[in-house]
Length: 420
Image (tube, rainbow, N blue to C red; front, side, top):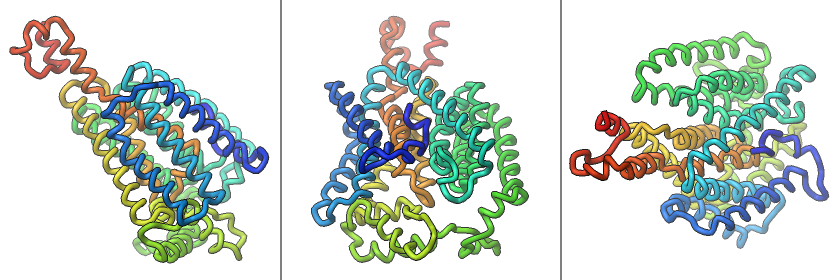
């Protein structure tokens, strides 16, 4: 999380044959793996929850048998490994003491917000609104916008549980995502806000009555900016306008060409794939005769299908589906039965939803800053099991031990009533 605050800045510094970003990512994996090994013991239920991702990593390693490793594939493998290690490491620590981990994560997200927003403010004052190229800003507008989705998920979860200070950070990060002119991140941010408002309508209806008009007002404001603000309007409706939506020509920024090239290549080996990093090689060939700096497929589902085949894509979708189900179920049980703030589960759930939406038109799974931070929060959500901590602490209460037959399943509310 310390490194994530600097966005893509380390990528602009060379360290021998690789960039500083690559060297730091390798260091990050090594340090995190050492911490994971130092834990010694791991909850069996947490290991079961991480099995789908471990299978995905294993399959990715097996593809090197028929597809020789390449530089791009090695870089992707390091980021994939970082995410998996952080999920298991963070989950193991959270299973031991979720409240302490929660406090540490709040400090980390505060650091990211302080440093990243300072960089963004400086870039806006010195260079103005970013152009299409990520090279226009030192910190990188697209990585900042995608990281902003992860950070925004955390602040939305805190806001749901009554943290008033989180509202300011939500507004600031929403503004940052908009000024980076990342359409995918902007749309994803509103998906997450809508998800939280729906959760309030289920469990906090009075707050939802206030939140819903504010959310709708924010949507109207952003739509107005899209139509009237020149940088966003040009990004949206001028350039590579190959797609028509409701009669309006939408700028797809070369994605139609990318996706067509990746799909055509993927069909050559649709089941087992062509190996990590090969989708990026296809994009490089497709744009070789242009001045474009495109190197990524801008759709991580197509990337995984091309590189790892239908087997890898199935495992990738299974990871998303299973973890969204687990995090959603754990959060719902904590809300419905015990009312203990399940902020870690809600954060992890929002991040998984946000990443799954971003993968449709962007490349979040290859950004070290994004996946390292996301793995930390998703792992904490998988390892928290807040509802079990609530129940175990309630069951340890002497009053409950004296009168188990009367109380039955114990909730915080019922326990308060019993004491009264």
